[in-house]
Amino acid sequence: MYKDVKKDEWTGRTDSTSLRSAFRFHQIVESINIEKQDIQPKKEFEHQINMALIGFECDEGVSRNNGRTGAVDGPKHFRKSLSPLPIHNEYLHLTDYGNVICNKTKMEEAQEELGYKISKILLYNHFTIIVGGGHEVLYGHYLGVRRANRNKKIGIINIDAHFDMRDYDEQPSSGTMFKQILDQDDQVGYFVLGIQKNGNTKALFERADEYGVQYIREDELRSHLSIETITSINSFIEGYDEILITLCTDSIDVSYAPAVSAPCIMGLQPQIVQTILQLVTNSNKSSSISIAELSPRFDIDNRTSRLLANIASNIYHDQAEVIQSQWES
Image (cartoon, rainbow, N blue to C red; front, side, top):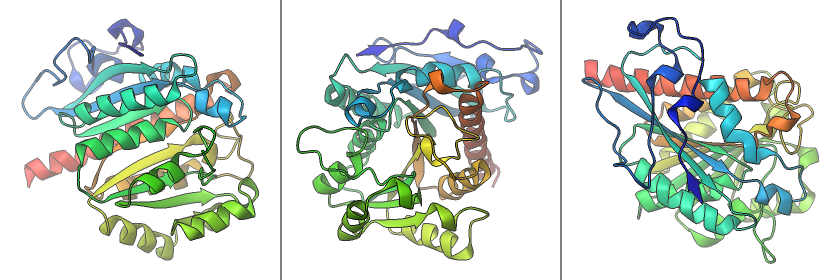
């Protein structure tokens, strides 16, 4: 249910082998087999800012949810797009902890395994990005954050076109995770941005209201973040000890992100998504984000994987700047 990622899978242009200001991600990544090596990244230099990445090769949840599969290949293509992007912080270090793999239909076991590994990774890294896979990656993400933050109140901020709160009486899927979590954990709150009226039934809106879910619809986020939206996000963050962030790529307009299970017509603009993520990650209450539903076989000119890689790079760099500024102050 696990495999490491070899360093030679990270490739890209090399402008210099010695000048760190000319480095790209493939030059600063360290690959660790989490089952064979000490999970703590090696210190290459003073004040190293450790960032982490782990993949989740699974689209069993998408299959169960009657979506179009392909997200199982998401982590591989995400790494390929992140590899050549430039580094702008000399202290930034990335550890790649490989991929948790869903063996055939054993999704629940894979989610448990992912949660266990994330809980260990969070101990030694400033920020961790988890790349799916379908949005069922979120449940494993939650298990890891909960294990690392026992007895704390966890707020989940989801950027998504869908509530993903369907019934799971028969079996969980990529459309049930948030109901699962809210049913199991009374110390969790849920806030979702980007909800599509035409992507959710009236019954799902009623269920969200019943569970006390906060949500902002896509049509309220088309051009900018209003003062009211920013205030709502900040107020939600203030109410929790730890903020878990998850991005379902199907929230982004199909013209920018065609490679998803359920392409989003009239979806969010990437700049809006980036602004929301910056607002949340800069709160100092978040240490991880899961990115779901990159299905490379539906991509056009790798635009979806490149978009997500750029979003991830910005998150890593934003977090590095926050940490470096704390050192300097």
